[in-house]
Image (cartoon, rainbow, N blue to C red; front, top):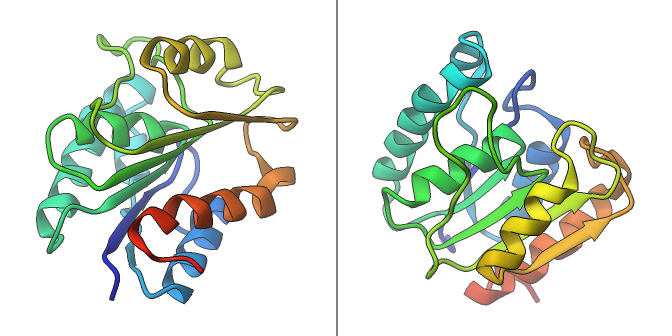
Length: 175
């Protein structure tokens, strides 16, 4: 086993969502162990009130890992992955359709500076407009890949898998 990857789905989604399922299967084919927490119960609290319980659930999953995991997140899953990485050591962050803020939540999105991070976002995202992630990436000098897609990134799944393979190559996981 190469290590563990924890994949966090977005709001109004679930652990069997397309992107996290495809990325989990891809990672497993490379020898990684994957875990997909189910945040649906937390999401019933509404966007702002789901952040703290999602972070707590993700921190418990990180604590259960044998070594610092790679975190993968989509939308709200990206937001909480970044926040959790501020509280626990993680190996990397692969974040899709990341909101720069959650309306009603008191804090902005953030990630630790020393963790390898890749942001991937759609130019046509009307749920998490690209301006927020563009400004965040520019401030932090983080790699950001923009694709011609919307919030769901469904037209970019193959590209996301390719980029994920390149990202995991940092740990010798991809040929």
